[in-house]
Amino acid sequence: MKNGVYTIFALLLTVTSVRAYPLDGLSHTGIARLEGYRLAQEGKARARRQPPGALLNLDQVDLRLQEYGDMEIPQPDPAFSASVRRLLGKYADRYGLAVLDVTDPARPRYAMHRDLKDHNPGSVGKLVVAVALFQALADTYPDDTEARLRVLRTAMIRADDVILSDHHKVPFWHPESMRFSYRPVQKGDTASLFTWLDWMLSASSNAAASMVIRETLLLRHFGRSYPASEPEIRAFFRETPRKYLSDLLIRSLQEPLTRNGFDTEQFRQGGFFTWRGKQIVPGTDSRANARSLIQFLLRLEQGRITDPFSSREIKRLLYMTQRRIRYASSPALGDAAVCFKSGSLYKCRAEPGFRCGKYRGNVRNLMNSVAIIEYPAAHPRLHYMVVVMSDVLRMNSAVVHQTLGTRLQRLMRKEHPPPANTGPADTRK
Image (cartoon, rainbow, N blue to C red):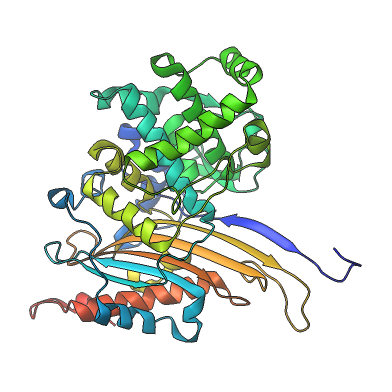
């Protein structure tokens, strides 16, 4: 701070209260909190009741474009792009936006606005971490998805210094009291690899993301001897040259993207999400744009992120089954299945008449949202993907994204009117 004139706040903010994965997934994953949220829907436990769109079962959250594996992002549709751009209003120059309408997959439509504008992805970069881990599992067990599931369910991972420090809370289910508690991850916490993935993507814990990166490096190193023992882990990070660790980190995070058809100059995660993780293993920078993230969502739905097994599990990990926030909190999406990830970064300085607040930066106010929308959830007649990357200063960016989610859903319903015999629920404004 120069002469005490400026006050700077720079916070990497991630989703802290959204939860994902279908609620009947306990036996498939071993993620304990799913049972608590499932029981809450029956009135047997205390937790938020879910909207209709969040109540699909495991089999219903599946890949919807596998038969269209050759589909690529089409050329932008000028009229569609103009309609989408008008939704942004006077702040259009503060957005990067991409919408891919695959309601009729034989005739996809693409709308974009500044879709190649480079952004810091924030917590959206955790998608890359998921790809890195699932690619490492696939390389270790290329023809054995049951072995991959076994590792995800049974590898018990103990938190160490790499989690330092992170304030985001994760859920702990206590079946004896039928209650949840919420707190940041602490050193010594032990959970399955599937649970760490869940905490990374649903609770958006930076500590969990750093643990998943750590486990990806260990899986790459130990192969089928993974999971490693605590002494082996300590020896690996203590005795391995730092340059080798850094090269392994970058290869582990970037090669899977290249192998899955992405340009790492446009989309990449550079390293750990915690300061201690970055000290232990230095990385590089992170970047993304709206087009690269739409490409990710499309390939996910096609089963082209590593393979169908990996794509399906990542999609399920993104399926929202708790409180909806930011773009996904739009009331217009209550009946929709939403697979979602978001992240933000804001920064403030002293300004007369302006009060800095959460998601309300006046120097930087980044908010990124990626979503797959299936509406209505059980029998969708709308299917589209959206990426919003904004830097609208001085406004609550969470509300900005929520509003845009409502406007775009209304536009999509107008673009695809229901059949004449559709019931009242589908004619709601």
